[in-house]
Each structure stands twice: as structure tokens, then as C-alpha cells.
Image 1 (cartoon, rainbow, N blue to C red):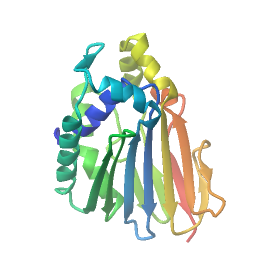
Image 2 (image 1 turned 90 degrees about the vertical axis):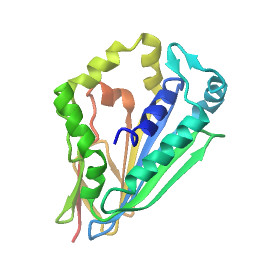
Image 3 (image 1 turned 30 degrees about the vertical axis):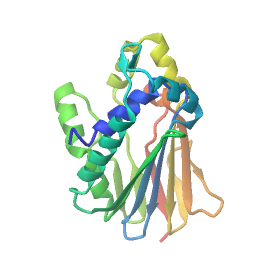
Amino acid sequence: MKRFFNFFILILSLTLFSSCFEILEEINLNADGSGEMLVTFNLSKSKSKIASIMLLDSVNGYKVPSKEDLGLALKEAKNHLKTIEGITNINTTSDFDNYIFTISCDFSSTANLDAVFKDLISKHNKKSKTKFNTTNFSYSTNSFKRSFSYDESIRRNFYKLNSEDRKVFEDANYTSIYRFENDVENVTNTNAKVSPNKKAVFLKVDVMSLILGEKNITNTIQLSK
């Protein structure tokens, strides 16, 4: 489990040297609850800066990961996903010209997606006395839910960073795009937008609002029968 998260840790460390980044979460959900998921870490808007920093060993006390570090961690993440029941067709990509990294997979049910993170979240909650959800995706009776439980530790850890490191998150965004076979009837997140054809839901939230607890990505999407 720890090796699986090496990739995410290294990607997050790259964001500390970036003035702008985006995390994109895409899910194509079938009517039976199976589907495809694609997660993209896009640092392309800061690619020139990151390319220069990648030539160094460390910056401001942070170790700069090498391309080899990132490649190995991505491979380990892929290998770990192969061990999870219901997760298949796992693919990864690395674009070191634009600094865009992706992980994609098929899943038999939304419970399979939760299995990827459940153990780690549970251990973190117990160790740090936090209250993060262990169930972040669910689907039943034409209702898809993306959950996120905010914990005050996010804000506390953010303010432990120095002012320069905090600036990194000012232009960062989290975006989700969920696509469905059936029409979307309604959504509960007021920041979410339904596509004109009613087959997709788009939500874009600046990371600073998530860190400070001002906005949330929790959303219940009701689909037509």
C-alpha cells in the first residue's frame, strides 16, 4: 500500500515547485455500476519552471524527484492496482515534456474504487484521529454519489507551511467530469454543472477553497430510470 502512494507523494512534491497545477478526475459510469476511471495530474502550465528545477537535487529543503523516481513509483502504483479485485485494464502515461501524468482503469463496481484507498484512509484516521471518509464513491438505484469529508487537519497542516509554499496552491484546481448512460435529473452540489445533453456533470473547484473548507466536492447525482 505504501509503495502505491509513492507516486502520489512524488507528484505532490512536484506541485511544491509549481505555480499552477490541476487534478482531473474522470469517470464513465455504466448503468450496471461498472465503468472507467481516469485521473490526470496536469502541471503543464508550469512545465518550464519544473524542467529547470528537475535539474537540481533539492529546492527550499524539498528533495526534487527524478524522472526515474517518478517512473518507478508509477510502475509500482500500476502493479498495486493489479492486486485489487474488480480493477482491470490498468494503464499509465508519463509526459515529461509537458509534465502530465495519468492513471486509468476499469472497475466492476464503485466499491472497487474505494478499495484502492480504504485501508490507507482507515490507518490514517486511527493514527491521526481524523475523520476522512473510507467510502468516497457509491452507486445504487440510479444515484451516483461522490463523497468527501472535510477534516480540520487539512487547514492546520496547510498553515504549517511557510508563506511561499502556501502560494503554490493559489492557482491550483480540482476538476471532476462524470459521464453517464442515463440522463442526469439533478445534482446536489451547487457548483456542479450538467452538460447540455444531460449525460455528464462537470465540477471545478479551486484547491484553496477545498483546503480552507469553503467548498466541497461531495455531490449526489440522480439519474433517470
